[in-house]
Length: 618
Image 1 (spheres, rainbow, N blue to C red):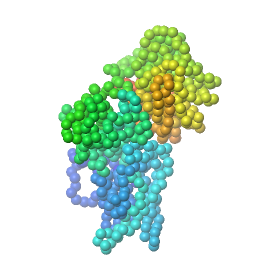
Image 2 (cartoon, helix red, strand yellow):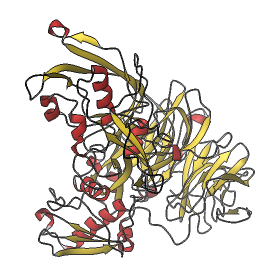
Image 3 (cartoon, helix red, strand yellow):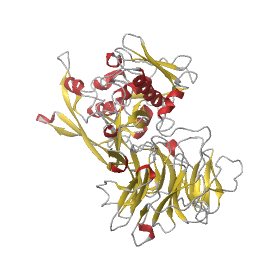
Image 4 (cartoon, rainbow, N blue to C red):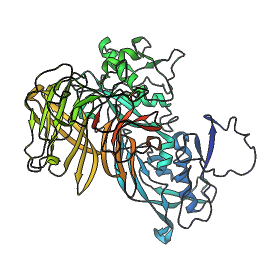
């Protein structure tokens, strides 16, 4: 739409409703060619779908335009950056222009909607109704949250009437009924919007949780805020509805940017001054530090700016506090070490071993200390605690879960969980640790399926409330570092899908009640998913197949959105994948040829010919 060619039944020529122009180096046509000062305006097809350098400029309806041109012009004008969508509103009746709220929601389709032939309506057939159809991928709600859908048929209508003009002498075709919000193709959505993470504190904890949303890549047509101000405003408005039950903001309720602030630009020292309204004027220093940390984590995800320090100001312009990025790292759930993490794996003898992922030459793996490394017990799956002092191991038959030190030798501890399932494949899943030190595992026993958590990785397991568990078989689990989201591989009707669940807790320690609820699709386009790993605060690396496609390895956001840049080089017969929160550490996978690492995002390199269950701490 706008930047891509649209197919309409019954159309004979291109619409004149909007103009797409290519920007060079971010400045419209600067250095590319001279701008012609005469001649007709015409559509320009983008060099590639979703190109963020393509700008679409809306063109107002022509005098006595036919209904087809009004509909086409409006659909294309929705893809523009026109302030207030003022030109798009010219295609609407006076009443519809006043009531239309483009910020209410965004409907994302695979391609621009197809317009069917019109049907006459109303008295004396003076109206026209157009059916819009397509394949819907997602919606974006008023809180900027992306909500994916399994691609399904989209069908809405646009209705036109002849509206009297102010001169009282003529009537023009105008739209009086239309779908809510914006309707965009996927490429136009990606051209106009970008994903950013807002950050809030996990309830009852002192570390932050990522909350992905979408903002405009340039100035927002409705609010007139630049991308930095949009991002700060989205943070101040609070978490998305899905995450809200398990996080808190340190900003006082009602905090907003000071009236009139629409642009935020860091100075030449990469310091950003953020003027706030009166709601924040009375906060203390410790609260201000945490507010600043939320801002610094959030702004770090904006590729267009570099912010090393934020200064929060009261409404009168006085300083609340100044905080730098290094200070904000105190509130990260998984604090980066000075060197990248190294992956672990289970060797051919069932022992836990450590690899040097950054070595120029692939070296010999080193077995860890303790019973998991000396061969006392043979393992099938492992998870290493985030402090790398302990590991959890599932025995080779899948029956028992044990936790042991990997820092020193010692006796083999007693099992903490035992599955009673008859078949090995129905017993325990690979375990997973969060930053609280809690250990998670699924017992896949068909007679008694359970999702279990061990507080602090010890003691009696807590059975997690999971009302969905009886309908789906759990193939694998991966808990996020922050402990409030869990990635689940669930099988039903021979298809394995990827869902993200929200972890809700009441109480503390071994007496707490834990639930996993409100599952959301994280890979709706994939027909089946083989493996998953967290690859950052709101990103997953996923192995799976789309319907009719081949196996692929790609990055997906936890909200289910994706981009062409997320597709990674292929690797045969991948059964497990592991990524670290630190981008410096390579991606590691268990393939048909052995344990391999992805070097420089270009080529996979074999590390070990035999082995399984590659994992980073977590």
